[in-house]
Image 1 (tube, rainbow, N blue to C red):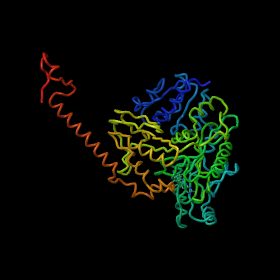
Image 2: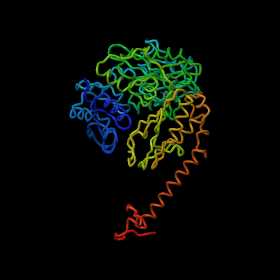
Image 3: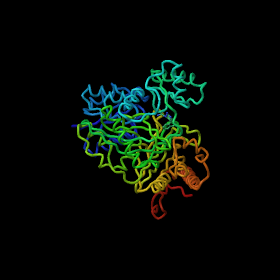
Image 4: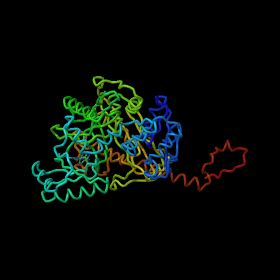
Length: 502
Ligand code: MV4
């Protein structure tokens, strides 16, 4: 039985895992780097262990340090969160060897899905549709050119060790084939120490739709429906929603079955995600599998009513899935926006600094998964995502209205955030109508630019009010009133007058 879990992560996801641990009566152990001594996850956990200097390759990515902390604390399991060591096969294996339960899939599942060529082969033999293309690395350039002529341009050259857009080239012209293959290979070799690349037919303006699956260690696997993740910027998701505005019950059922088949093909255990690209005619193709809990998991939790972290822990504990496919129903609509510490009106520059004040949105249907607090200095070493704002309502249009209300109420001073940009997304006709694809942000660049709308004017008035307060404080200070209680004259009667009157 798992009694104590070490969370090998930081920020909002560490706090998210700690919350489920507390509800389940499981003790939680935080780990922290130098820069994270004052981080919220350290305070939220039952215990905390220092694991090294601020750069993640000296702390959150050092397997030995994390195992040592787990041993010292007496934890019996490790939750890796997302990022860091979450998709590291060596870490999964090492936990097992040390007698610690890794709350995630086997090294075999991570390795098979991590190598895109191997994953494509596996999916083909499991009957899952993959993007038309090759299933062997390009060895001979002439043969690659011949193959591309056969399937026709445009194509994408992708690194087998890639994913998330790294080591990828779009080829639209015959004369670019050789240089694209050559540069993709050298980029992949430099980035992943593996220069193998393969060919895929290019799917124009696709949707990114992913399916959540959960599987236990007894061969049971179900899907928890889809998430629409097409609002992305430079392969970073910005808004996610479920259900997808373009999904139909028939396609959902079919894609769900293929997602379960994909997971079963690698004996998957735990929570995972099957990513598809989908064209306008709802033809769908397997892209990759994420063998971890994802950032956007809360929208699924809300719409299907399952605590995914609790499910992960129960599975790792050797329990059977407590739900059957026919128990899974989507209720209402959920949307998540990721809040980044960045200046969206200045080329999305990271906005480091100290949070002066934060007012988190509350109210019906609002969930805020964050970790920053007033006075917190955002470290430069890690991802600039500071929180996720998730709303739920019974319909999509109500959910959009609720999200706008919550973004409006969300006030952070001291740093710039993506909140104003997110608000503008919710007003763009393609978003409102649910007719967007992965080119949404590019296609709506002009509409997404800062403009003097009603919200902006209210923000300006709020800023002026804060400044007036600030000036008043300076005046008080000059008159030595600062931090001293004001005494009405009748209260001051009979006392030594130490208050300078204006
Ligand atoms: C593609 C594609 C079109 N055709 N593959 C980008 C990230 C990586 N996971 C795969 N990606 C793409 N692969 C073929 N054959 C278009 C993209 C793509 C994309 C995919 C999902 C979400 C956002 C995207 C943004 C640009 C390109």
